[in-house]
Length: 299
Image (cartoon, rainbow, N blue to C red):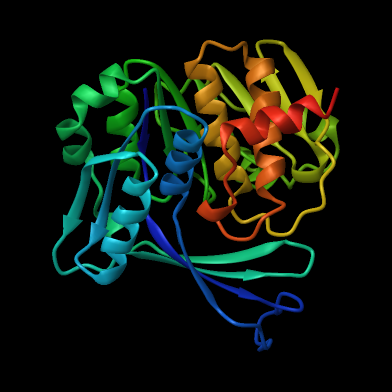
C-alpha cells in the first residue's frame, strides 16, 4: 500500500499562444476545469497503475471540495483521512499551457495550507503500514515532517513547488527534484548539463538516493558515489502539467513492488512520458497496461 500526504486542487486550465511576460496580458482559449493538486495527482497516478493508495489531506467546504473527493475517491483512492475544513476554500491552480505543452502555474493553497501534524497523527496507522509514503511541497512543512517521522516504509519526497531555503524533512529515503528545484535546494544556478546536475545533486545531504527529472533530457539517478543518466522516451508532448506527479506516483508503485531503483525509475519515466501526450492533470495519467504496452514497443 502507498500513502500520499499532500494537496488537492481544482485546476483551471487555459491554452495560450505563449506565456506572458510581467505586465503583459495574453488572450487564451476556452478554460477547462480538471481535478488536480500534486498530492491528488500522485495518488491517482499510483492507483491507476494498480496500487492500493491511502490519502491524507484537506479540502474546503465548497463545491470544489466535493468535486475533488469524488474525483480522487472515484479512482479507488482511500479518502478516509481527507478532512473537510469549515470556512475554507478548496485549493485552486490556475494553469496556462502553451502550444508546445509547457505550462505556467499559480497555486492558491486554500485548505491545503491547514494540513498539519495532527492530521498525520490521526493517520499514523496508515503511514506505518505503507510500503512507500509520498510527500510534496503543496502542504505545510509541519505535515511533511510528521508524515516522514511516522512512515514505516520508504519515504519519497518531491520538493515541489520549491522555495529557496527549503529543507527536506528528516527520514527521506528518496529525493525527487527537477532542475529548478535542485537549484533552489542547493543555492546554485539551474544546472544545464549532466555534469552540472551531478555536481549540484552531490551537495544534497540526508536522502539515501536522489532522482533528478530533466524533462526531455531524461532522468539522472544518484545513489552513493555512483550516478546513471537515463535518456527520455521519445514522444510528442501535448501538455506536461502532471508529468512530474505521474513520475512520482509511478516510482512509488514500482518501489512498493520491490523493483530495483534503476528499473523503477525507467518504468516511472515511461508512465510520465505517456502522460505528456494527453491534456489535463489526472485525465492524462495512464493505466498500467498502457505503460507496459508502451515499454514493449521500446525494445
